[in-house]
Length: 224
Image (cartoon, rainbow, N blue to C red; front, side, top):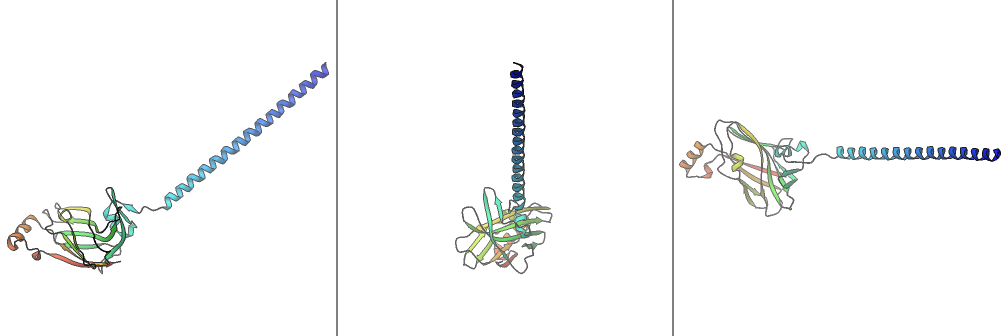
């Protein structure tokens, strides 16, 4: 009887040791799988972070930032619309940053011109930049900016807002004129001087609103 009990005791001890080894093995296997999953997740997050950092921002709702080509923006966000730059227009006075300047006494505008395409596929000549009223009287525009393209298309955009400014103010803005014909490779732009209220009154009284008597600049631009 003692021999039987001894054999049963030895069997129980061996079974307990076997279960312990299996439990330790199972626990080690689980820990190894968890470590592999954690490492995999960390690698995936690192890869995603690197891809995010590698993709530069190419769009902005700031017309002055988009106007400066050194910023490498190619799309202007305009509310629910987007204007993608297809190419820029330049002349001999255009700076390395793609910007141009027009100055009339106390009024100055810094701008870039581009052919853009919106989300509907419509194309336009777009002016982006910044205007400044350095004088002591409000300014407003009396004539639209005019374009005549090499496709013999004549078009304008309303520069009322572009010239309506309180004194001592600068602001970022953009304007565009949609095109009905083929993409232009060059055009002539006519930009009129904004006037004070007194200047506008004198001009209208003396010339009966003759736009040919206004100060203006005519500039030639071509595809960059």
